Length: 219
Ligand code: TZP
Ligand code: MG
Image (cartoon, rainbow, N blue to C red):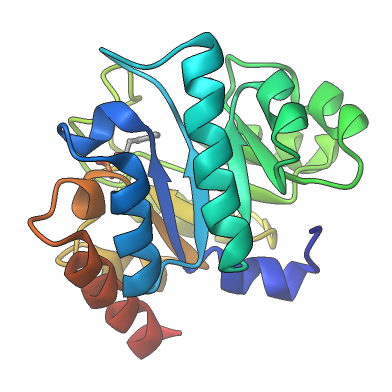
């Protein structure tokens, strides 16, 4: 499913990003089910970090998560892995600055959602020129999930992009929890992307529901 810009803005409202290493031993399928119950609006399969599955095992988990998203009409995005996005017939792909070039991803997937990580206005402008559908902007706050994360830029990073004329759908990422979510949305993000605030919560369903309530209050 390729969404129109306004649909994409809505889908980005509560974006769960996750792979098995983020689930602290819990079954990622169960975590995703709970998060969907709680009200997430988009999902990214990001199988990365210590203990990450590879090869057929990673693909098999991706297929289960993909299926679950399809059943609930949640857009399913694959992080980085162009081949997996193809194999799973993902709705989209998200790439960082160090991954496959945005132009190439755009060319290869004319019909899919293409998300690009951008850390400043210059990166945002070149992602826009490359044909990105949305940008991931971060880290908003300190994060323990991504060890090679860039310097924290805070919601001000979003403000700078909006002031610089970026109208593309934007999602903030990095260290966002219920306490920090509102500032990200008020900074100009269409939504929040979270990993640990949901996957590491005692109840991923309740955590997602609480975040969704904050989003609904502001949007
Ligand atoms: N990109 C920038 S920060 C980050 C990614 C994937 C990790 C966000 O994880 P958390 O647990 O929400 O801080
Ligand atoms: Mg990447």
